Structure formats: structure tokens, C-alpha cells
Length: 137
Image (cartoon, rainbow, N blue to C red):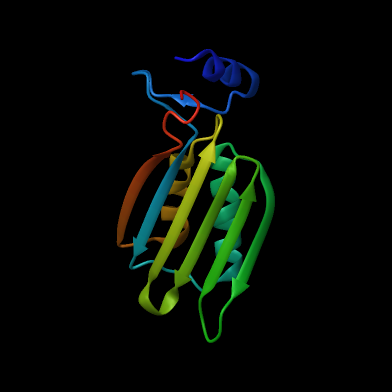
């Protein structure tokens, strides 16, 4: 481990360590929901996003929802720790969701909240560590 990386970690606490020496900036969880319900209900989407942010232990700075005609919603939550976004295709029962956080927050905690809000028939989750060893060089 370089002295620079060690110093940054102590100062900011933003970098994670997996316990095996892999250092990374944050975790990006990509969630696909199929057979989902309530995807055109702006109140449900807004509430689910707020609850997911809270469950992750993140800090919400701003939340914006855009409604498409004749249907569909896109929502973006700007977080101190990064972002949460959702793109809804109610006509297909499909939602594409990204949750990326750094620091002490955990984006995986959004998954049960989103499952409960949209009651999907199928969920696919992909996890990606972002900024691997970014400070070790």
C-alpha cells in the first residue's frame, strides 16, 4: 500500500478495502426488474427511491422525477455518496436501476426496498467495484 493511499483513506474514509488488499472507491449495483408493478406511479417511485437511499445509509441531496408521455418515469437521486437512478417502462413491466455509493453507505441495502415497492417477478443484480486500486498507484 502506498503512503499516498493510506493518507487519503485516513483523511476521507471514502475508500473501501475488501480485506484481501483490494481497494476501491465504491460499489455500483445494477438492478433489473422484470414483471414489476406500479412503475408508472410517481408517488410509489419517489417513495421507493427515498426509502432505498435511507436504507443504504446515504445522504439525499436532490431527487428529480421526469414523466414521459404516454407513460414511463425516470428518476435520479443525487447523493453525497454518488447516485441512484431508475428508468421505468411500465408497458413492459421493466425497470433499470443503478445504485452507486462510496464511503460507509451500502447500495445492496436498496434491493429489498425496491423488491417490496415494485413486486417484480424476476430480479437480476450485477455488482461492480468502481475505482479499483485508484489511489494505490
